[in-house]
Image 1: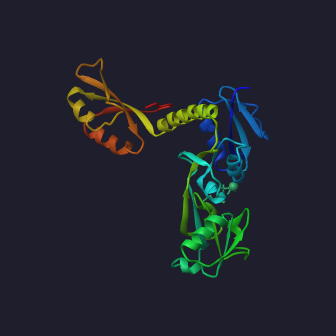
Image 2: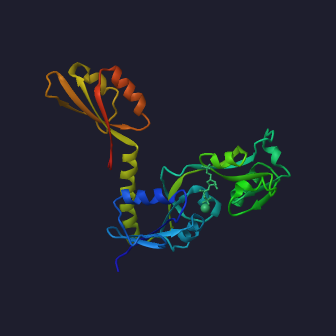
Image 3: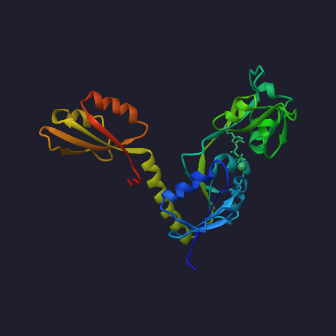
Length: 287
Ligand code: PRP
Ligand code: ZN
C-alpha cells in the first residue's frame, strides 16, 4: 500500500475548524468526514486525519500513532513530549496567564506566596514558580478552572487567555503572562523517507497558503508622470508591473503588498497621485 501520513487535529475546540480549513486551503479534500468520525482520509492527497482531544495530541505524535499534529504550543510545552515543531501557523494565539480576583490589590509576584493556584497547566506553572522563587500550592483541575476562586477552591488561577472574556465574566483579572502561544504543526521525530516526501509537499502548500494570506494584490491607476513616485513606495515581489491604459497618458500599476505595510503604503500612494486603487485577496502565493 502506498505510504500515507496521519495528522492529528483537535476534535472540537478553538483550533478545530481553522485547522481543517487550513488543510482544505491546501487543496486537501476529505471523504467520510461526518460528525463523530475519528479518522477521515483525504481523497486527493496521501493524508489521513485523526480527531483527538488537543491534550492527547502530543503523546500520539511522540509515539508515532500520528505522524503530524496541529495544536497549541502551550499544549506541547505542558506535555513535555519530544516532537519536532515544523511551523507556526499564525492562528490560535493565546497566552497562559496568572489571574486573580478583580478586587485584589495586586502589586507583584510575591502576592502568590502561600496562595492556592488552580490550573490545567501544572508543569508550566511549577516551572514558572521555580524560576521566580514563588512558593504556592498548585491545584490541578482539568476544566472550568476559571470558577475555582469563586467556589473557594483557589485564590488564583493559571489558565489560557485569548480574548479575555472568560476572565472578565468570572470577576478575574490577568496579572502575569507565563507563556505566549499560537497553533503550530508538530511532527514525530522518526518519519521515514517516503513520509518526508509527503510532508515536504504539504509544507510547500502550507507556505503558499500562508504567504498568500499575508499579502494582497493591488491594482491602481495613475497619470504617467506619477508612476515613478508611486513605484518608489511599492515593494512588489520583484518589481511592480506597469501597463498602459486605453486613456492616453495613464498607466495601471499592479503589485503585491504585505498586510503589515498595507495601510501606510495606501496613504502614500494616494498622496503620490494613485487613483482607483483595488485591493484583492491572493489565494496561493509561491515565492
Ligand atoms: C481556554 C481557557 C478559557 C478560554 C479563554 O480554553 O481555558 O476557558 O479558552 O478564552 P477567552 O480569553 O477568549 O475567554 P480552550 O478553548 O483552549 O479549551 P481547552 O483548554 O479545553 O482545550
Ligand atoms: Zn484542551
